[in-house]
Length: 462
Image 1: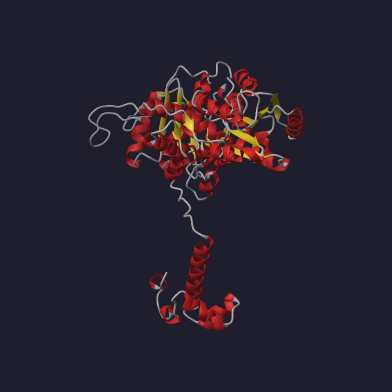
Image 2: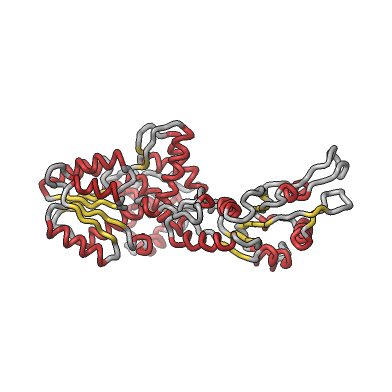
Protein backbone atom coordinates (compact mmCIF):
# COMPACT_ATOMS: atom_id res chain seq x y z
CA UNK A 1 0.00 0.00 0.00
CA UNK A 2 1.23 3.50 -0.67
CA UNK A 3 2.07 5.47 2.41
CA UNK A 4 -0.07 8.29 1.05
CA UNK A 5 -3.13 6.14 1.54
CA UNK A 6 -2.18 5.23 5.13
CA UNK A 7 -1.09 8.61 6.49
CA UNK A 8 -3.62 9.83 9.03
CA UNK A 9 -5.48 6.51 9.16
CA UNK A 10 -7.26 5.85 12.46
CA UNK A 11 -6.09 2.74 14.38
CA UNK A 12 -7.67 1.46 17.59
CA UNK A 13 -5.25 -0.26 20.00
CA UNK A 14 -6.80 -2.48 22.71
CA UNK A 15 -4.46 -3.90 25.37
CA UNK A 16 -4.56 -3.87 29.15
CA UNK A 17 -0.74 -3.69 29.29
CA UNK A 18 0.15 -0.02 29.59
CA UNK A 19 3.69 -0.54 28.24
CA UNK A 20 2.37 -2.29 25.11
CA UNK A 21 -0.19 0.47 24.53
CA UNK A 22 2.45 3.16 24.94
CA UNK A 23 4.93 1.37 22.63
CA UNK A 24 2.35 0.78 19.88
CA UNK A 25 1.01 4.31 20.12
CA UNK A 26 4.52 5.73 19.84
CA UNK A 27 5.39 3.52 16.84
CA UNK A 28 2.18 4.31 14.99
CA UNK A 29 2.34 8.03 15.69
CA UNK A 30 5.84 8.03 14.20
CA UNK A 31 4.38 6.57 11.00
CA UNK A 32 1.69 9.25 10.80
CA UNK A 33 -1.29 7.23 12.08
CA UNK A 34 -3.99 8.56 14.37
CA UNK A 35 -4.21 6.25 17.39
CA UNK A 36 -6.92 5.66 19.99
CA UNK A 37 -5.85 3.46 22.94
CA UNK A 38 -8.29 1.32 24.97
CA UNK A 39 -7.78 -1.01 27.92
CA UNK A 40 -10.68 -3.43 27.43
CA UNK A 41 -13.04 -4.81 24.80
CA UNK A 42 -15.92 -2.80 26.23
CA UNK A 43 -13.93 0.43 26.06
CA UNK A 44 -12.88 -0.43 22.51
CA UNK A 45 -16.47 -1.05 21.38
CA UNK A 46 -17.59 2.25 22.89
CA UNK A 47 -14.78 4.04 21.05
CA UNK A 48 -15.73 2.35 17.75
CA UNK A 49 -19.34 3.53 18.12
CA UNK A 50 -18.24 7.14 18.54
CA UNK A 51 -15.21 7.29 16.22
CA UNK A 52 -14.95 4.27 13.88
CA UNK A 53 -11.35 3.29 13.08
CA UNK A 54 -9.98 1.70 9.92
CA UNK A 55 -8.24 -1.04 11.87
CA UNK A 56 -8.34 -2.70 15.30
CA UNK A 57 -5.21 -4.15 16.91
CA UNK A 58 -6.21 -6.11 20.01
CA UNK A 59 -4.64 -8.42 22.55
CA UNK A 60 -6.44 -11.77 22.93
CA UNK A 61 -6.15 -11.80 26.73
CA UNK A 62 -8.18 -8.88 28.05
CA UNK A 63 -9.99 -8.30 31.34
CA UNK A 64 -13.64 -9.42 31.07
CA UNK A 65 -14.51 -10.02 27.44
CA UNK A 66 -11.47 -11.28 25.49
CA UNK A 67 -10.19 -10.31 22.06
CA UNK A 68 -11.78 -13.31 20.35
CA UNK A 69 -15.21 -12.35 21.68
CA UNK A 70 -14.60 -8.78 20.50
CA UNK A 71 -13.71 -10.07 17.04
CA UNK A 72 -16.87 -12.20 16.85
CA UNK A 73 -19.03 -9.16 17.57
CA UNK A 74 -17.19 -6.99 15.04
CA UNK A 75 -17.48 -9.74 12.43
CA UNK A 76 -21.26 -9.44 12.77
CA UNK A 77 -21.64 -5.68 13.13
CA UNK A 78 -18.69 -4.39 11.07
CA UNK A 79 -17.57 -7.19 8.72
CA UNK A 80 -15.27 -4.97 6.65
CA UNK A 81 -13.30 -3.74 9.69
CA UNK A 82 -10.00 -5.68 9.83
CA UNK A 83 -8.78 -7.02 13.19
CA UNK A 84 -5.20 -7.99 14.05
CA UNK A 85 -4.78 -10.06 17.23
CA UNK A 86 -1.75 -10.03 19.50
CA UNK A 87 -1.23 -13.31 21.27
CA UNK A 88 1.05 -15.03 23.75
CA UNK A 89 2.33 -18.47 22.79
CA UNK A 90 -0.32 -20.18 24.89
CA UNK A 91 -3.17 -18.74 22.83
CA UNK A 92 -1.73 -19.43 19.38
CA UNK A 93 -4.25 -22.23 18.63
CA UNK A 94 -7.08 -19.81 19.40
CA UNK A 95 -5.54 -17.20 17.12
CA UNK A 96 -5.12 -19.70 14.28
CA UNK A 97 -8.75 -20.73 14.64
CA UNK A 98 -9.82 -17.07 14.62
CA UNK A 99 -7.82 -16.46 11.45
CA UNK A 100 -9.73 -19.24 9.71
CA UNK A 101 -12.94 -17.41 10.68
CA UNK A 102 -11.84 -14.05 9.30
CA UNK A 103 -9.31 -12.35 11.61
CA UNK A 104 -6.96 -10.43 9.32
CA UNK A 105 -3.90 -11.76 11.11
CA UNK A 106 -2.20 -12.41 14.40
CA UNK A 107 1.26 -11.80 15.84
CA UNK A 108 2.91 -13.49 18.80
CA UNK A 109 4.42 -11.54 21.65
CA UNK A 110 7.10 -10.29 21.75
CA UNK A 111 6.47 -9.09 18.20
CA UNK A 112 8.76 -7.31 15.79
CA UNK A 113 7.59 -3.73 15.25
CA UNK A 114 8.41 -3.76 11.53
CA UNK A 115 6.41 -6.96 11.04
CA UNK A 116 3.43 -5.40 12.81
CA UNK A 117 3.68 -2.21 10.76
CA UNK A 118 3.82 -4.24 7.53
CA UNK A 119 0.72 -6.17 8.62
CA UNK A 120 -1.05 -2.91 9.45
CA UNK A 121 -0.22 -1.52 5.99
CA UNK A 122 -1.70 -4.67 4.40
CA UNK A 123 -4.86 -4.37 6.51
CA UNK A 124 -5.34 -0.70 5.66
CA UNK A 125 -5.13 -1.59 2.00
CA UNK A 126 -8.37 -3.57 2.28
CA UNK A 127 -10.21 -1.62 4.97
CA UNK A 128 -13.20 0.56 4.20
CA UNK A 129 -13.08 3.69 6.29
CA UNK A 130 -16.29 5.47 7.28
CA UNK A 131 -14.42 8.73 7.59
CA UNK A 132 -13.11 8.32 4.03
CA UNK A 133 -16.53 8.45 2.39
CA UNK A 134 -16.92 11.39 0.01
CA UNK A 135 -17.48 14.61 1.85
CA UNK A 136 -20.40 16.59 0.45
CA UNK A 137 -19.68 19.52 -1.78
CA UNK A 138 -22.64 21.90 -1.56
CA UNK A 139 -25.46 19.42 -0.85
CA UNK A 140 -23.30 16.50 -2.02
CA UNK A 141 -25.89 15.12 -4.43
CA UNK A 142 -23.68 15.71 -7.47
CA UNK A 143 -21.37 12.98 -6.09
CA UNK A 144 -24.11 10.43 -5.38
CA UNK A 145 -22.67 7.83 -7.79
CA UNK A 146 -19.00 8.44 -6.98
CA UNK A 147 -17.21 6.70 -4.11
CA UNK A 148 -13.58 7.44 -3.39
CA UNK A 149 -10.85 7.85 -0.83
CA UNK A 150 -7.77 8.33 -3.00
CA UNK A 151 -5.94 11.60 -3.37
CA UNK A 152 -5.98 11.29 -7.16
CA UNK A 153 -9.79 11.14 -7.25
CA UNK A 154 -10.13 13.93 -4.69
CA UNK A 155 -7.98 16.22 -6.84
CA UNK A 156 -9.83 15.24 -10.01
CA UNK A 157 -13.24 15.89 -8.46
CA UNK A 158 -12.11 19.27 -7.11
CA UNK A 159 -11.23 20.25 -10.69
CA UNK A 160 -14.52 18.80 -11.97
CA UNK A 161 -16.52 20.78 -9.41
CA UNK A 162 -14.75 23.97 -10.41
CA UNK A 163 -15.25 23.51 -14.15
CA UNK A 164 -18.89 22.49 -13.65
CA UNK A 165 -19.70 26.07 -12.72
CA UNK A 166 -18.76 27.24 -16.22
CA UNK A 167 -20.15 26.32 -19.62
CA UNK A 168 -16.76 25.28 -20.98
CA UNK A 169 -16.48 22.11 -23.04
CA UNK A 170 -14.75 19.31 -21.15
CA UNK A 171 -12.82 16.37 -22.63
CA UNK A 172 -12.74 13.42 -20.22
CA UNK A 173 -9.89 11.01 -20.85
CA UNK A 174 -9.39 7.56 -19.43
CA UNK A 175 -9.27 3.87 -20.19
CA UNK A 176 -12.45 1.90 -20.86
CA UNK A 177 -14.32 1.17 -17.67
CA UNK A 178 -12.86 4.00 -15.59
CA UNK A 179 -16.22 5.78 -15.27
CA UNK A 180 -16.15 8.56 -17.84
CA UNK A 181 -19.93 8.78 -18.17
CA UNK A 182 -20.34 8.70 -14.38
CA UNK A 183 -18.02 11.73 -14.12
CA UNK A 184 -19.87 13.49 -16.95
CA UNK A 185 -23.20 13.03 -15.15
CA UNK A 186 -21.66 14.39 -11.94
CA UNK A 187 -20.44 17.51 -13.76
CA UNK A 188 -23.93 17.98 -15.19
CA UNK A 189 -25.53 17.68 -11.75
CA UNK A 190 -23.10 20.25 -10.33
CA UNK A 191 -23.74 22.74 -13.15
CA UNK A 192 -26.31 25.45 -13.66
CA UNK A 193 -27.89 23.12 -16.25
CA UNK A 194 -28.69 20.44 -13.65
CA UNK A 195 -32.45 20.87 -14.18
CA UNK A 196 -32.04 20.41 -17.94
CA UNK A 197 -31.64 17.10 -19.79
CA UNK A 198 -28.48 15.00 -19.79
CA UNK A 199 -28.23 13.13 -23.09
CA UNK A 200 -25.48 10.55 -23.67
CA UNK A 201 -24.49 8.82 -26.90
CA UNK A 202 -21.62 6.42 -27.64
CA UNK A 203 -20.21 7.44 -31.01
CA UNK A 204 -18.55 4.06 -31.46
CA UNK A 205 -21.68 2.01 -30.77
CA UNK A 206 -23.87 3.38 -33.61
CA UNK A 207 -23.22 2.43 -37.27
CA UNK A 208 -21.80 5.34 -39.24
CA UNK A 209 -24.80 5.61 -41.67
CA UNK A 210 -27.16 6.09 -38.70
CA UNK A 211 -24.99 8.30 -36.50
CA UNK A 212 -25.72 11.56 -38.36
CA UNK A 213 -29.48 11.06 -38.08
CA UNK A 214 -29.17 10.06 -34.41
CA UNK A 215 -27.20 13.19 -33.61
CA UNK A 216 -28.88 15.83 -35.76
CA UNK A 217 -32.28 14.34 -36.63
CA UNK A 218 -33.86 14.21 -40.09
CA UNK A 219 -36.86 15.48 -42.03
CA UNK A 220 -39.49 13.30 -43.65
CA UNK A 221 -38.22 11.70 -46.85
CA UNK A 222 -34.57 12.55 -46.15
CA UNK A 223 -33.62 8.96 -46.94
CA UNK A 224 -35.24 5.59 -47.55
CA UNK A 225 -37.29 4.67 -44.50
CA UNK A 226 -37.59 8.23 -43.16
CA UNK A 227 -41.41 8.17 -43.09
CA UNK A 228 -41.62 11.03 -40.60
CA UNK A 229 -39.47 13.83 -39.25
CA UNK A 230 -37.43 13.10 -36.14
CA UNK A 231 -35.38 15.28 -33.81
CA UNK A 232 -31.83 14.22 -32.99
CA UNK A 233 -30.01 13.90 -29.68
CA UNK A 234 -28.46 17.35 -30.04
CA UNK A 235 -31.93 18.88 -30.05
CA UNK A 236 -33.00 16.59 -27.19
CA UNK A 237 -30.16 18.04 -25.07
CA UNK A 238 -31.32 21.62 -25.63
CA UNK A 239 -31.03 23.56 -22.38
CA UNK A 240 -28.89 20.82 -20.84
CA UNK A 241 -25.78 18.74 -21.44
CA UNK A 242 -24.81 16.54 -24.40
CA UNK A 243 -22.25 13.82 -23.61
CA UNK A 244 -20.46 12.26 -26.59
CA UNK A 245 -18.64 9.14 -25.44
CA UNK A 246 -15.80 7.74 -27.57
CA UNK A 247 -15.66 10.96 -29.58
CA UNK A 248 -12.46 9.66 -31.20
CA UNK A 249 -14.57 7.16 -33.16
CA UNK A 250 -16.67 9.85 -34.85
CA UNK A 251 -16.26 9.85 -38.68
CA UNK A 252 -14.50 12.88 -40.17
CA UNK A 253 -17.59 13.98 -42.12
CA UNK A 254 -19.62 14.24 -38.90
CA UNK A 255 -16.77 15.99 -37.11
CA UNK A 256 -17.27 18.90 -39.53
CA UNK A 257 -20.99 19.09 -38.73
CA UNK A 258 -20.39 18.87 -34.98
CA UNK A 259 -17.86 21.70 -35.23
CA UNK A 260 -20.53 23.86 -36.89
CA UNK A 261 -22.95 23.14 -34.06
CA UNK A 262 -20.34 24.27 -31.51
CA UNK A 263 -19.35 27.36 -33.47
CA UNK A 264 -22.77 28.60 -34.58
CA UNK A 265 -25.01 27.01 -31.94
CA UNK A 266 -27.38 25.76 -34.63
CA UNK A 267 -28.14 22.28 -35.98
CA UNK A 268 -29.35 21.30 -39.44
CA UNK A 269 -31.31 18.00 -39.57
CA UNK A 270 -30.51 15.57 -42.39
CA UNK A 271 -32.41 16.63 -45.51
CA UNK A 272 -33.40 20.04 -44.11
CA UNK A 273 -32.67 23.39 -45.73
CA UNK A 274 -32.96 25.33 -42.48
CA UNK A 275 -31.07 25.26 -39.18
CA UNK A 276 -32.47 25.19 -35.65
CA UNK A 277 -30.88 27.05 -32.72
CA UNK A 278 -29.69 24.91 -29.83
CA UNK A 279 -28.32 25.71 -26.39
CA UNK A 280 -26.13 22.86 -25.16
CA UNK A 281 -23.09 22.28 -22.99
CA UNK A 282 -20.84 19.65 -24.58
CA UNK A 283 -18.94 17.03 -22.61
CA UNK A 284 -16.98 14.39 -24.50
CA UNK A 285 -14.86 11.40 -23.61
CA UNK A 286 -12.31 9.13 -25.23
CA UNK A 287 -9.93 6.32 -24.44
CA UNK A 288 -7.98 7.04 -27.65
CA UNK A 289 -4.98 9.33 -27.96
CA UNK A 290 -6.53 12.18 -29.94
CA UNK A 291 -3.16 13.83 -30.52
CA UNK A 292 -2.03 10.69 -32.37
CA UNK A 293 -5.34 10.56 -34.26
CA UNK A 294 -4.82 14.17 -35.39
CA UNK A 295 -1.30 13.39 -36.58
CA UNK A 296 -2.71 10.48 -38.61
CA UNK A 297 -5.44 12.65 -40.14
CA UNK A 298 -8.22 10.80 -38.30
CA UNK A 299 -9.37 13.69 -36.12
CA UNK A 300 -9.82 17.36 -36.94
CA UNK A 301 -7.51 19.72 -35.12
CA UNK A 302 -10.06 22.57 -35.05
CA UNK A 303 -12.66 20.29 -33.43
CA UNK A 304 -10.09 18.98 -30.94
CA UNK A 305 -9.42 22.47 -29.59
CA UNK A 306 -13.16 23.13 -29.33
CA UNK A 307 -13.60 19.97 -27.25
CA UNK A 308 -10.45 20.19 -25.14
CA UNK A 309 -11.10 23.52 -23.43
CA UNK A 310 -10.67 21.68 -20.13
CA UNK A 311 -9.21 18.17 -19.93
CA UNK A 312 -9.87 15.77 -17.05
CA UNK A 313 -8.16 12.37 -16.86
CA UNK A 314 -9.64 9.51 -14.84
CA UNK A 315 -7.04 7.25 -13.21
CA UNK A 316 -7.00 3.52 -13.80
CA UNK A 317 -8.43 1.47 -10.93
CA UNK A 318 -4.94 0.10 -10.24
CA UNK A 319 -3.83 3.70 -9.63
CA UNK A 320 -6.50 4.22 -6.95
CA UNK A 321 -6.36 0.91 -5.10
CA UNK A 322 -7.39 2.45 -1.80
CA UNK A 323 -10.80 3.08 -3.41
CA UNK A 324 -11.42 -0.60 -4.20
CA UNK A 325 -12.86 -1.63 -0.78
CA UNK A 326 -15.22 1.36 -0.81
CA UNK A 327 -16.32 0.72 -4.38
CA UNK A 328 -16.83 -2.99 -3.71
CA UNK A 329 -18.92 -2.24 -0.60
CA UNK A 330 -20.92 0.40 -2.50
CA UNK A 331 -21.70 -1.99 -5.34
CA UNK A 332 -22.49 -4.82 -2.93
CA UNK A 333 -25.09 -2.77 -1.04
CA UNK A 334 -26.95 -2.00 -4.26
CA UNK A 335 -26.66 -5.51 -5.67
CA UNK A 336 -27.63 -7.27 -2.44
CA UNK A 337 -30.83 -5.22 -2.50
CA UNK A 338 -31.35 -6.00 -6.19
CA UNK A 339 -31.01 -9.75 -5.62
CA UNK A 340 -32.80 -9.69 -2.25
CA UNK A 341 -29.87 -11.30 -0.44
CA UNK A 342 -28.78 -10.68 3.18
CA UNK A 343 -25.10 -10.23 2.31
CA UNK A 344 -23.28 -7.92 4.72
CA UNK A 345 -19.82 -7.71 3.16
CA UNK A 346 -16.67 -9.51 2.07
CA UNK A 347 -14.51 -11.80 4.16
CA UNK A 348 -11.17 -10.10 4.93
CA UNK A 349 -9.17 -12.42 2.65
CA UNK A 350 -11.72 -11.87 -0.12
CA UNK A 351 -11.35 -8.11 0.26
CA UNK A 352 -7.57 -8.45 0.12
CA UNK A 353 -7.84 -10.36 -3.18
CA UNK A 354 -10.01 -7.58 -4.62
CA UNK A 355 -7.64 -4.88 -3.42
CA UNK A 356 -4.54 -6.52 -4.89
CA UNK A 357 -5.91 -8.00 -8.15
CA UNK A 358 -5.12 -6.63 -11.57
CA UNK A 359 -8.05 -4.70 -13.06
CA UNK A 360 -7.62 -4.33 -16.83
CA UNK A 361 -11.37 -3.58 -17.08
CA UNK A 362 -11.18 -0.98 -14.30
CA UNK A 363 -14.30 -0.04 -12.30
CA UNK A 364 -16.65 -1.72 -14.77
CA UNK A 365 -14.83 -5.03 -14.25
CA UNK A 366 -15.01 -4.61 -10.46
CA UNK A 367 -18.77 -4.06 -10.72
CA UNK A 368 -19.14 -7.21 -12.81
CA UNK A 369 -17.09 -9.26 -10.34
CA UNK A 370 -19.11 -8.02 -7.36
CA UNK A 371 -22.37 -8.74 -9.19
CA UNK A 372 -21.30 -12.29 -9.97
CA UNK A 373 -20.23 -12.84 -6.37
CA UNK A 374 -23.54 -11.45 -5.12
CA UNK A 375 -25.59 -13.60 -7.47
CA UNK A 376 -23.77 -16.81 -6.46
CA UNK A 377 -23.18 -16.16 -2.75
CA UNK A 378 -25.20 -18.11 -0.16
CA UNK A 379 -23.48 -16.85 3.00
CA UNK A 380 -23.54 -13.51 4.89
CA UNK A 381 -19.93 -12.80 3.89
CA UNK A 382 -18.61 -13.32 0.36
CA UNK A 383 -15.70 -15.80 0.65
CA UNK A 384 -12.31 -15.56 -1.06
CA UNK A 385 -13.02 -18.65 -3.17
CA UNK A 386 -15.99 -16.96 -4.82
CA UNK A 387 -13.97 -13.81 -5.54
CA UNK A 388 -11.24 -15.95 -7.11
CA UNK A 389 -13.84 -17.71 -9.23
CA UNK A 390 -15.39 -14.45 -10.36
CA UNK A 391 -11.97 -13.04 -11.20
CA UNK A 392 -11.12 -16.28 -12.96
CA UNK A 393 -8.00 -16.49 -10.80
CA UNK A 394 -6.60 -20.04 -10.91
CA UNK A 395 -6.30 -21.56 -7.47
CA UNK A 396 -2.76 -22.76 -6.86
CA UNK A 397 -2.49 -26.54 -6.91
CA UNK A 398 -1.11 -27.81 -3.62
CA UNK A 399 1.94 -29.91 -4.47
CA UNK A 400 4.64 -31.46 -2.36
CA UNK A 401 8.12 -30.01 -2.85
CA UNK A 402 9.28 -33.25 -4.48
CA UNK A 403 6.38 -33.27 -6.97
CA UNK A 404 6.84 -29.61 -7.82
CA UNK A 405 10.56 -30.20 -8.41
CA UNK A 406 9.80 -33.25 -10.59
CA UNK A 407 7.37 -31.28 -12.77
CA UNK A 408 9.80 -28.41 -13.15
CA UNK A 409 12.69 -30.69 -14.14
CA UNK A 410 10.69 -32.54 -16.78
CA UNK A 411 9.26 -29.34 -18.23
CA UNK A 412 12.76 -27.82 -18.31
CA UNK A 413 14.19 -30.83 -20.18
CA UNK A 414 11.34 -30.83 -22.70
CA UNK A 415 11.85 -27.13 -23.40
CA UNK A 416 15.61 -27.58 -23.87
CA UNK A 417 15.18 -30.47 -26.31
CA UNK A 418 12.56 -28.55 -28.26
CA UNK A 419 14.96 -25.62 -28.46
CA UNK A 420 17.90 -27.77 -29.65
CA UNK A 421 15.89 -30.04 -31.98
CA UNK A 422 16.80 -33.07 -29.88
CA UNK A 423 20.56 -32.40 -29.68
CA UNK A 424 21.77 -33.74 -26.34
CA UNK A 425 25.15 -32.05 -26.72
CA UNK A 426 23.59 -28.62 -27.20
CA UNK A 427 21.00 -29.14 -24.50
CA UNK A 428 23.59 -30.34 -21.97
CA UNK A 429 25.80 -27.34 -22.74
CA UNK A 430 22.90 -24.89 -22.16
CA UNK A 431 22.00 -26.67 -18.92
CA UNK A 432 25.66 -26.60 -17.81
CA UNK A 433 25.66 -30.39 -17.26
CA UNK A 434 27.82 -33.14 -18.76
CA UNK A 435 26.21 -35.43 -21.32
CA UNK A 436 26.25 -38.50 -19.07
CA UNK A 437 24.36 -36.67 -16.33
CA UNK A 438 21.97 -35.24 -18.91
CA UNK A 439 21.21 -38.70 -20.31
CA UNK A 440 20.42 -39.92 -16.78
CA UNK A 441 17.91 -37.08 -16.38
CA UNK A 442 16.29 -37.99 -19.69
CA UNK A 443 15.99 -41.65 -18.61
CA UNK A 444 14.48 -40.56 -15.29
CA UNK A 445 11.60 -38.89 -17.13
CA UNK A 446 11.29 -41.39 -20.02
CA UNK A 447 12.42 -38.84 -22.58
CA UNK A 448 14.49 -39.68 -25.68
CA UNK A 449 16.18 -37.16 -27.97
CA UNK A 450 14.58 -38.78 -31.02
CA UNK A 451 11.19 -37.53 -29.83
CA UNK A 452 12.28 -33.98 -30.66
CA UNK A 453 14.17 -34.43 -33.93
CA UNK A 454 12.47 -33.15 -37.05
CA UNK A 455 9.17 -32.70 -35.18
CA UNK A 456 7.11 -29.52 -35.21
CA UNK A 457 7.30 -27.82 -31.81
CA UNK A 458 3.56 -28.03 -31.38
CA UNK A 459 3.66 -31.80 -31.86
CA UNK A 460 6.56 -32.47 -29.53
CA UNK A 461 5.86 -34.16 -26.16
CA UNK A 462 4.73 -31.91 -23.36
